[in-house]
Length: 68
Image (cartoon, rainbow, N blue to C red; front, side, top):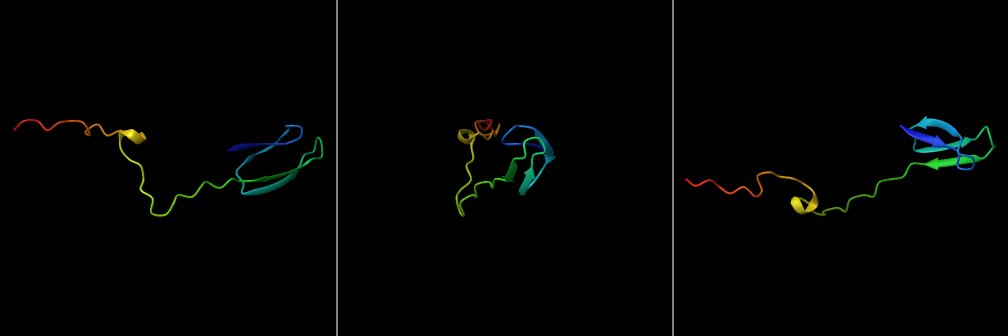
């Protein structure tokens, strides 16, 4: 869960998950408007990066075939 704090005085207003939230701080009276950020969408049809170069680990990638 995410901690929700006042943008003006930093008082903790609550904890939770939200898409949009408007809350008035009881300490300073500031109106806090919060909105969840959207993740950047993946491009349609874009190849997904794979392999050791992109951070995936496949222990058999460099193993040579054993002789007959």
